[in-house]
Length: 183
Image (cartoon, rainbow, N blue to C red):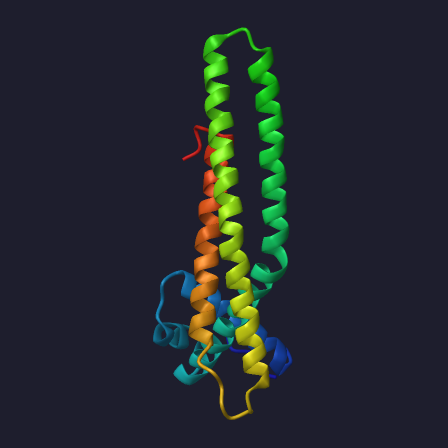
């Protein structure tokens, strides 16, 4: 195959070229360039970049779905376990310390950790409901005839975005509880 100077194509299979181009699309898009600008820079058609962007969006959705259904529950358990550890250690410090300032600080950490724990446990129901919703929409989508797709992509995306926001808030709360200077 021919080499396009400056664009990075070398003797590669079509699949390798496509993979390389999609990686470049992500890289260039991250710099804030539009699809048209990316097409010009990579010297390919606008429709090729549009197809690449669609493929990359679908791939990102799948990655998010996998993260939410497989990795998030594990991280949730790890977070709860870490909070329990903080509570145990804070209680030990609180009962053994002679310094009243230190006791007050640990009592505040103890209280804040309980609040974060309560928030996470409260969010567990929300997360569980959202995961159930996503799974039911996926099940409905699989059951529907090939030509009739349910409009669940946007609903699923919204649910995933909501979960992601809740997860970020939960981790921020945990960080604030564990490290009061975290900002």
